[in-house]
Each structure stands twice: as structure tokens, then as C-alpha cells.
Image (tube, rainbow, N blue to C red; front, side, top):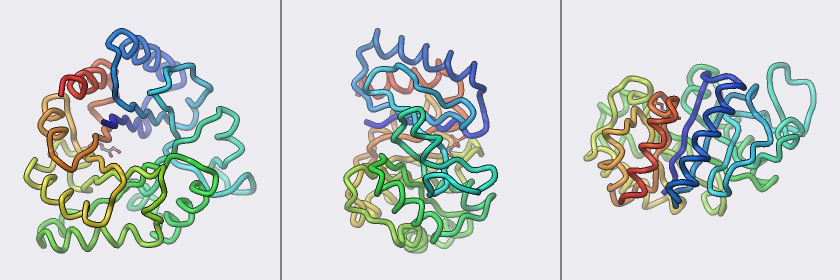
Length: 235
Ligand code: 13P
């Protein structure tokens, strides 16, 4: 399974180091078999010495080697730390920062050409969910426009916008139905994200077409995140 933590705009350089130390000790001790991904903020990136099943990635980057893109980081800044995992298309980037599908696809192509492992996020807003499953599937498939689904280092995260940071996760039945429908098109590992908590991790990971979770809020506490990994190990 893939168990991923998106720090968003949380944690500092210092607390990220402490977090990864604890995580590393936990996985060493438990012998965890999970694929663990951690996305700290850009200011906390570093060349971390962690086990090979823990990969640190970037939450966002501009699709350039380097250049004049104030406030962004490019390949040169990521390369300094030898990182090769990136999150693209997160709903906060799409909705708060106005990233278009064309920009998401451009980022995807660029980082794919550099051999990155890409966690590509899709997810519908509440009004689309209210319109029913066919509308949900259509909306999510539109967010795959221009995305090469045969890329071997692709991981897709289905994160309904209405479930992100709200404490209101999609139900097991909703995730099950949506993943089953998306699976007809997406062969890559398919994660669920949106208010996942330690208490809901087991039931979500047991869903047939769910290959892992992408967690925000609940994962910012390292003990909670370790509990989720432990739950995945127990399945
Ligand atoms: P929450 O777990 O806080 O809902 O965030 C999910 C998410 O956006 C992960 O990328």
C-alpha cells in the first residue's frame, strides 16, 4: 500500500527533521512493508537519510529547470536534494491558485520527462457530487485530460474537494463506487484522500480498488501517521 502525508503549509525545517526521524525509527522497528511518501513544505526540503521505502517529495514545482518565476521552485532546486517525487494537480493548487488543466498537464509532461514519480490528484467539488456518480466520473476524467496514464511512475489520488480538510470523509460506499468506476480508465495505483483519520484508515484501505491513502490534517502528527502505517501493515 501507499501511505502518503501531505504537510501542505505546516511544519518547519526543524519539525520536519524530527518528524522524519521518528518515522524512520518507527519503520525500522516495525519492519513496515508500506510505500511511504512525505511531502514537506519547500523550505523544509533536504537530503534526508531515510529507508528506501520512505520517499520525500515536493508539493509543487514549476515545470522548468530554472528561470524567472518568482516564488516558484524548479528542477535545479529539487535536484539539490536528489528528490524524485512530486505532487501535481492538488485541488488547493487548482482552486486557490487557479491552476488550469493545461498547466497541470504541462507540469505532468515536464516532470515525467525527468523521470519523477508523480502523485497526480483529481477530485470533484460538492455540487458535482450532488449531481450523481456519472457527473462525478465525468468531472474526474476531465482532470485527466493531457495526462499520460500509461506512465509507469504515476500514482493517482482521488481527493473529493468537499472532503478535504472538512473532517467529513467520503463514505466507504462512495469511495468504493468512485474507485471502481475510475479503475476502468486508470490502471495506476489509486489512492483516496480527504479527511482520512487513523480511525477510518482500515475501512478505506480494505476497499478493493484503493491502493493507499493521501492524508493531510491527521498525518501532521507523526504518531497518528505511524498508526496509519501500522494499520496498513496489519491488513
Ligand atoms: P485532509 O486529510 O486534511 O482532508 O487533506 C487531504 C489532502 O488534501 C491530502 O492531499
